[in-house]
Length: 228
Image (cartoon, rainbow, N blue to C red; front, side, top):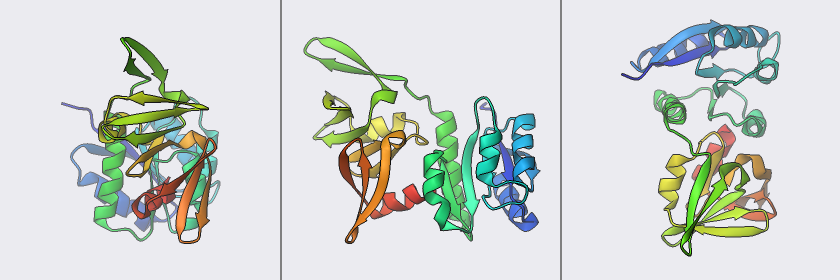
């Protein structure tokens, strides 16, 4: 039997903490190990309790949610930001939050965020890809990938000024990548969040700039990027 996901809830509003706690407790695979009501308390609770996942408010007394993250040492847990303010979405994107919940949210939206976090915690993530070509196998470090494009039944790995064809579907590769680091922004593109330099709007369309490439963002993906 898999160990339950250990969750910490950090929010300065008692009713908000209670709401998240009750939603977590409804899932038998989740256990709430603690709560915090401010940024400093959140950082201290994370260090003491070592949760797997933190539902973290942003605007709190004694330090924001971002301040709490900056205080941490070692390997941090996964974060889902919970806030009434959309303006922090791009900064959350920078620290690779698993999701971004805007208050007020529905039970279904919360369940989606929790499912994404559980998936990220449970799935093994490759450090390298085995790329077969012309009778040999090349090993590509995941960290070196800027973005991934669809190419019929294969994918094209973009690394700096070169691209490499890899025989795997977008859906299969997306499932194996860390969702906190790689986001599918379009049916034909997955981006490495560390390589995204800007999210821009041109007319009615949104694009991301990744290592010199300008890639379109679907409406569905744009809402996911706001949660990052």
